[in-house]
Amino acid sequence: MNAGRDVERLIADWFVEEAVLRAPDRVLTDAGRAIDRTKQRRLHAAGRTIQMPVSPRLATAAVLGVLVVGGALLAMRPSLVSVATSPSPLVSPTAPSSPTPQPTASPPVASDAFVIPAMTERTTPGPDGISIGYPTGWVVEEDGVRWWLNGEPDSQLLIGFYVDSSKLEVSETADEWVADSAAEESEGISMTCPAPGPTEIMIGSEGRRGIVLSSDCRYGGMGHHFRAVLVEGDRGYSFHMDTTRGNGRAWFEALLANVTFEEAASEDP
Amino acid sequence: MNEGNRTPLPEHLARARAGDRDAFDIVAASVVDRLYTIARLILRDADLAEDAVQEALVRCWRDLSTLRDDAHFDAWIRRLLMNAITDEFRRAGRRRTAISMLRREPPAGDPADDIATREQLARGFRRLTLEHRKVLVLRLYLGLSLEETASTLGIPAGTAKSRLHYAIEAMRVALEADARSPIEEVSA
Image 1: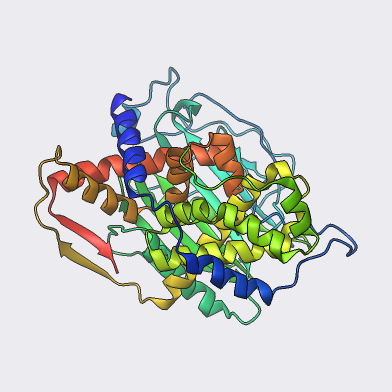
Image 2: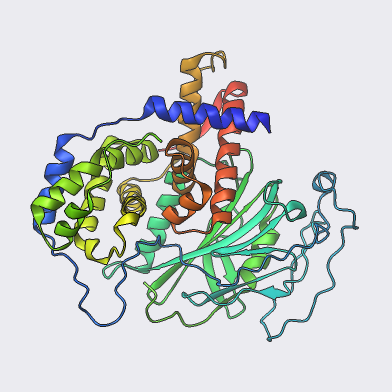
């Protein structure tokens, strides 16, 4: 913990050292020229025109119930089991029945006995129509689902799966959107990726196939990163998974297989 | 708090909202430095930071009428900036061909050495995703609370917390890894 605080202090001090406190004058003058060509938005139009500049990440769930079930969900690898201090045995949960029928893909089982429990729960569809199946005990957040060791966010994060989506720009093709996403993936982070698995991956249970941009790519200390993208109609979807353990492809596949698509809300940007 | 400039006066905001360009110039001048500081820290590129700030100011002008409460101006324009930063980052990525290569770094110096540490921090920071960088800057430079950070990014507080956790851990490991290993994979 102290080491973490030291790093925070180090980063904070570094930011202060690196900060450039004055913008070049041309920023204002150039912005002024662009503003001269820009009409102000007016609020007299019918309906809501609140321009909350939300990020392209669109919520997949409005449900914010915190479902904590100790940490006794998963039969984890021994190294992780040894970290967990759950008093209960690590077994797959007996699934409570879901109130609505769901497309459930048979959960894959990783070859290293990393047992994936049934995806017995489901988020409510977000404005982009996506809902995510997940095991009991995971925490549902606005943009995805996560499982924390012993349900404690302060503890070591094990798995987080989240989705964002955005409409393609008017002139943007699906290929361009995917290429853009791939470029962003490479630009934002330096990762060490093992030999890539299949570049196509099943998303949902209706035959949709996404493209894998990252698979079990290692970054930083905590990260094994997965990302797949899919363009459906005029919307591009990104599915991300971060986990503290390697060989998580089976998890990624299981979570992706339990994504469902419904029609996006019409006002969804 | 390390932000420069000052919050614009309500009268200037009101006039700018009504379309008064002179008033908006005052508003813009009152925030431009701190927006630039934030953008520069996150993007680590002067040109991209300038473009992001310009875009944020244009959006501010365009959408100012939609700001319901002037008391929320600071948070609102930070959100505009975050979106502009994302857009600039994506545009920059589009212009570049993403390749990976294995680069052999010069041996890391004594971790206690300030310069070496700064270089390690810079390398570690560049490896972070844009979203992780944003969380770090908002939280550790601006000193925003987790809730404010989350609000600025349009994400739940829990997500902000997990991103912060990831980012700090990634930076810590980057520092340790740089101290250990001379080989680093980079994107160009």
